[in-house]
Amino acid sequence: MAKVNGMKEKLHMPLYDAFFVPKTTPDIPFANRMTDPRVIRFFVDVQNKTRLETNLQAAGMLPSLNSYEARAMRVVTSGLNEAAIGDLIYNSVTTLLVGEKIMVESPTYMFPSGTGVSNGLGELPQHGDADPRAAFSFAEPSHIESQQNYRVEISFPHGVPGAVGGPAGTLGALKGPLRIWVVLDGYLTRDVQ
Image 1 (cartoon, helix red, strand yellow):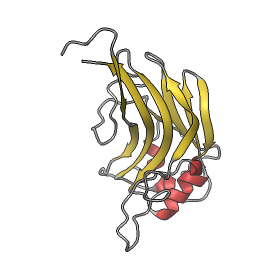
Image 2 (cartoon, rainbow, N blue to C red):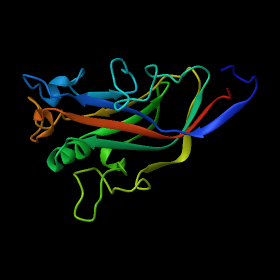
Image 3 (spheres, helix red, strand yellow):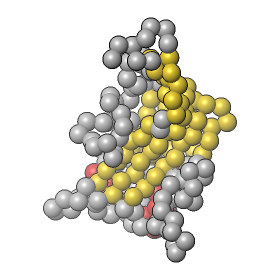
Image 4 (spheres, rainbow, N blue to C red):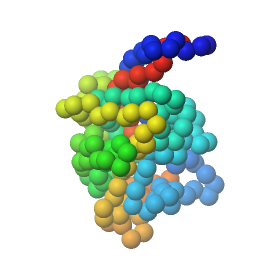
């Protein structure tokens, strides 16, 4: 389709990216899958990921001349038990960087998932209520302009709990399959086609 010059459309679209620990033989624990022993980076490595793990086409940048207005951010987990979720959210700091400017930074427990399954009989282990309204909302939208780098980092200032050299816990020793997603929720502005 040809684009319509001078016309833009704005649509509600989440951007998401995941850190994935697959089930392998032999199993390699969570901490040994991390490229950097103290930080997990999101939106910077999208190669060889499925649509379940990311909806980005290019690492750390929006496609073409698109821009994005982030209004909420959440951290979502799958395959973690309650102890490991506790290790993650209470021992890490989550940071949204646009360019190299910090837009928000806080302990990970401030970014509930607002997702999950609730059947009235009990919920699967998750971080926060199973309600999409239960997410961290920015007081003012964070803007990502076209061709501007952005990323989210989850850092472990004292090391990954349960990893060799880290504090006590279970997260670092967990084996796959498991995923940790970061979801930016907001509005994508793009050319009309």
